[in-house]
Image 1 (spheres, rainbow, N blue to C red):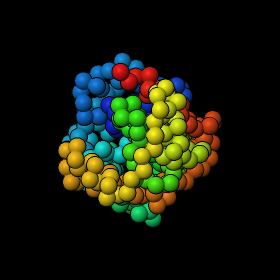
Image 2: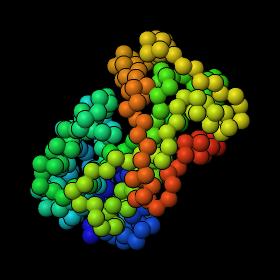
Image 3: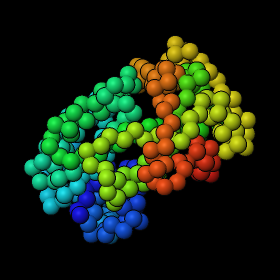
Length: 288
């Protein structure tokens, strides 16, 4: 088995490489691909091959994918360009004779009103129409998505959000990465879609309590309306597009779109998912 992992210079992709090796995949059977040559040099220290790729440059994809039989397509970070970039990757996989693709999608991608869902829906449709064997992993939120909120809470003593009483079924990035390695190293995952999420859900009050424990200082949940949230974000210099996006995400959470705990992720990795509180404690240790 020869596996190419895209996004390998990012947090998730690098963890996937590490978990594949931990599960017995020979480093020489792994190609770590990403945009940053310097970061790839660090990944290469594990013994894997590396390749510089650009989702917008099919020639780089063709060169990197040659000889591989499995593609781990870590979704692009470029919101608004993902569908086209992912299409390039799938087409390159077809040209290279790759047989299987594992894709990191979004919760309820084909049916959800989640602001991030449309690009993932389009990508899933591209993959399922490609003729490639697929495993689609619809990842809920990462605990680490709240690192900036934790740092802000340390400075201000508040967790500001317009999520109301909405809940998030997050897990650690490491949990999701291990699940990718699991579906690549165990049988029974062909042509399936998995909704992956944490074992439990949490809300703003829970975050504030967990942040208080992690930081050792009081953190209050400051719940605001979408309008108030937008005004606050704009007042600190965020552009209108980003403000709208962030407020919409909080509205999605308020509407329950990320409140979907399930045991699928924990079943795949063979252990409970990582609670938010555990990740916040780890993150707090790195804050100045």
